[in-house]
Length: 221
Image 1 (cartoon, rainbow, N blue to C red):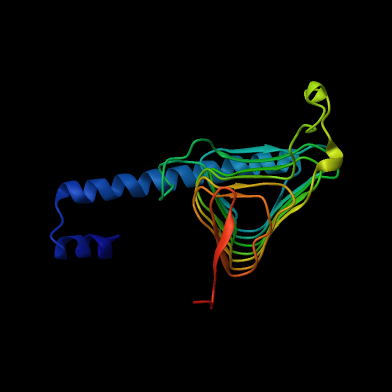
Image 2 (cartoon, rainbow, N blue to C red):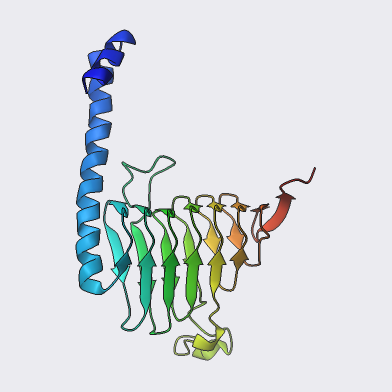
């Protein structure tokens, strides 16, 4: 603290600069402490598996169907507070939800989520090591209703149409993106902001658009 104060004096920061920084730092620390404590209590009560060093800023919505599995690897970061999110405001807290005994949500070590909604209705949604998911993204394994006939959509859940979602390691998914059922995103890929991913993205590729298409692969001109 003394060292930081000395640096502030050397940079000739005003008292308003110092106060603004202290407000940011204190809000971040309080949000992280409160969010992490609440997450650990809910995880214990609801049977959600947490690795060491998992942190949460703000509230996290957990919903684990009996028999299903939600597992967060060591060092995962769940950001549900607009005060903590660096890129934008967040529409809603991080939400992890399963709806059947066969459903799985698997987050590997170091995954970062910001206001992300992940729904595994009956299949598996897995995210690889150190992948970053930007603000307000949605990832789901299901359409939640049968496509046809239209007259019975409201009563036909069509579990047989659900498909796994697999996202590799070191992937970067831009804000406001939608990752739909049956998609595999390879290691090191980038999904541009606002994309709707309905087909596989190769490793080290950049995908963008609605629907998302590969626009570049690392190493290509």
